[in-house]
Image (cartoon, rainbow, N blue to C red):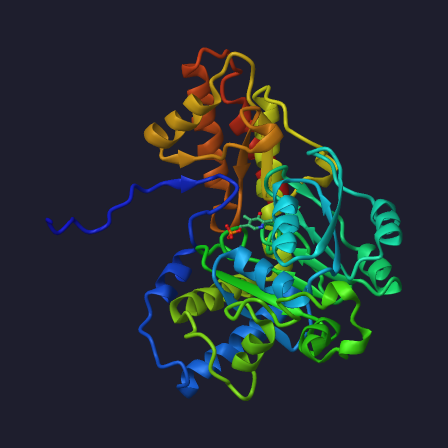
Length: 411
Ligand SMILES: *Cc1c(COP(=O)(O)O)cnc(C)c1O
C-alpha cells in the first residue's frame, strides 16, 4: 500500500449543530507532549481540570472530572452507575436526545417512564412535577438544550421539585453548556454531563461531568443495600453490581481522587484539550462568552428572517447557539447544503425524525460564535438560494445581522 499524503482537510467553516471548528489554542494544547499518568505533573493537571470545570459548571461539587469518551460516555456513566435494575427513571422528551437518555436508561434495565411534547416546544415545571407525582421515580433524566429541535428546557424550578420528592436530578447539557446559562448548585442539579464539541469549542472525545454529594452517596452505597430490603425485581440474576467497568463512577472517582487507584489510562491529549477549552471559556469570562453566543445567535436569526426564511419552534425557548430554519418550498434542502459545503466550504446541519427534510439547523458555537462567521454564512446562503431559483432581497440577511452586531457593540 502506498504511504498516503499528510492530512490536508479543506478549511471548512462548521456552522452546523456541532461539531464546530476548535479554538486554535485548543488545537495547540492537544499537540502537547505526554507525561506519565502518575507523574505529579499529570496528577496536578487532573486537579486543575477538576477546579476549572467546577467554575464552568458553577458548582462546589468535589466530584467534577472527565469521563473519557464522547458526550454519551458521560450520559452512560451517570445512568449505568446510578440505575439498579427496576429503578424508575422519568425522561421528559422534547427531541432526539431525550430518546437517547430513555434508550440508555432502558439498557441499564431501568423502568423507564417518558412524557413528551411536540418537537419545537419545552416542558413547564408543572408538567414535570405532575409526572414526578405520578411516577415517583428514583431519577429524572432530562436534556437542557436539544440540538435536534434547538429548544432550551428551563431548569431553574425543577431542582426544588426533585428535592421535595427525593428524586435525583440529572441533565445532559452537552449542547447548551458554555453558550447558555447553567448553574448547577443554584438549580440543585445532582448530576450533569457535557461534551466539548459544542459551545466549549473543542473536539468531541471528552465528557466533563459533575456529581452532587447526594448523587455520589447513591452510587457509592448501591452495592451495600441490605438484601432484605430489596424487592423481588432488584434480586435479578445479574445482581446489583454496576454493569460497566469502564463507566463505573465510584472506580473513576477513586482514580481521580487522592488514592489514584488505577482504572483506565487517562486520555491525556483529550485532558489537555478539555483543560484549554475551560481556560478559554473562563479567561473570556462566562458572562461574556454567553453574551457572545446570544449576539451571534440573534444576528443569525435576524439574518435568516430578513431573507424571508421562517425559523422553527418556540423562539422564546431557543438555545442561543443554534437556529432551525424551514427549507422553503421548491428548494432542495440537500442541494443547498451540498453547494454550501463544496463551493463555499461552509457546513450547516440537516435534521432528524419528524423534522427530516423540513429544516436546516445553523449553529453559532464556540470559536464560530463570531461576526465574520455569521456574515459569511448568511451571504453564502443567499447566493446558494438564488442559484436554486429563489428571488431574495439583495444583502438583506447580512444587513440585518450587521445591525444586531453593531447595536450589541454600542451597548
Ligand atoms: C451533540 C449532543 C450530544 C453528543 O453526544 P456524542 O456522544 O458526543 O455524539 C449529546 N447530547 C446532546 C444533548 C447533544 O446535543
